[in-house]
Amino acid sequence: MACSLPGSLSMGFPRQEYWSRLPLPFPGDLPSPGIEPESPTLTLDLGEAMMKAKRVRAQRSLVQPLPGSPQELELVESLLKSRPEEPEGCWEVRSAGAGAPRGSSGRQERSRLPWEDTTVEEDASKLTALRLRLDESQKVLLKEREDKMALSRNIEKLEGELSQWKIKYEELSKTKQEMLKQLSILKEAHQDELGRMSEDLEDELGARSSMDRKMAELRGEMERLQAENNAAEWGRRERLETEKLGLERENKKLRAQVGDLEEALARRRRQTASALDCDLRASQAALFEKNKELADLKHVHGKLKKQFQEKVAELAHANRRVEQHEAEVKKLRLRVEELKKELAQAEDELDEAHNQARKLQRSLDEQTEQSENLQVQLEHVQSRLRRQQQNAPLFGKIRSARFGAEEAGDGASDLDEDEDLQIQVA
Image (cartoon, rainbow, N blue to C red):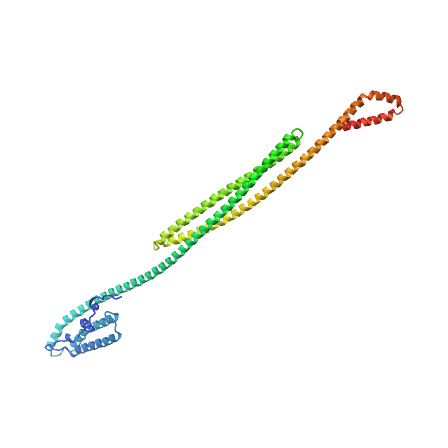
């Protein structure tokens, strides 16, 4: 990056013109032929200065630095430092030869001394100004170089960030598509699960209706049995009523369990539907925010990372919730299977109760027959006793007349028979 140098260094003129502008003793600065020449010492010093300038120019032509470089400044400083020493050396030479008879040369030297002092001061001021300008130009050049390097680094950094953001945008678009696919899959699975649960519920309702029909049949049969055997079957009726109450309790329990299952299924359905809707809305809002944030990547770099992490956490939480729902659905399936088993057991128990009722009916018939037989026997015994009581005096007289000797033994046997009859009647 080029920079304009102050003063004569920024003009770009040839080297001879550049050195001609410097305060060096070129041949044009020597006194004219009409003026008396200076002492041999002054001319010798000027010749040495010219030789030094030539050697420095030769070295500078070999090195070939740019105008205004530090080497040229050092050369200018060395020449300016060596030039003010020349008048002092000349005056020392002149003071050494003060006894010479030439007075006109002394006056010329005294008139030449103030002019040389003023030129030296002007050269020194010019040199300081050149130094200051050169320092300022070097500072500006360094600052511009640093700015250029910083800008190039910033440009490279921004290009890298832009490429990273492009990659992240592509990744986010891919994750968005994957999330939409997963949501559609979850919806389909949820709908299938709801269909299966509704089918299971319909099966349970059918089983419940069949149970109700069986209970109604049992009730009708029990009422019929009660109407037929109302007079003699109080004990059996009580037993059947107790069994009926037990069955009704079990039926109530089963109904309560079925109602609880229906409420749990409805609640689970609402919860899963609301959870899926909330997740869908949250994912849609997140995707909208992502698209909105991707339009202004430079301003929302930090927010995008935080929101991406939050969305990853929400997705993990949603996956955990889905797993929990699956576990709960499995538990509900196991519970439904257990309820089916319990219903089958209840049906078996109802069949056993029906069989027991038939057995009780048969036993009741047998007992009625036995009671009728016992009633007939009792009537026979009572009639026999009445006859015996009526014929007792006559039998006593006959026995006293005929069996006087055998009265004691026969009386004991009759008493035994009477006791047996009384025991049978009792």
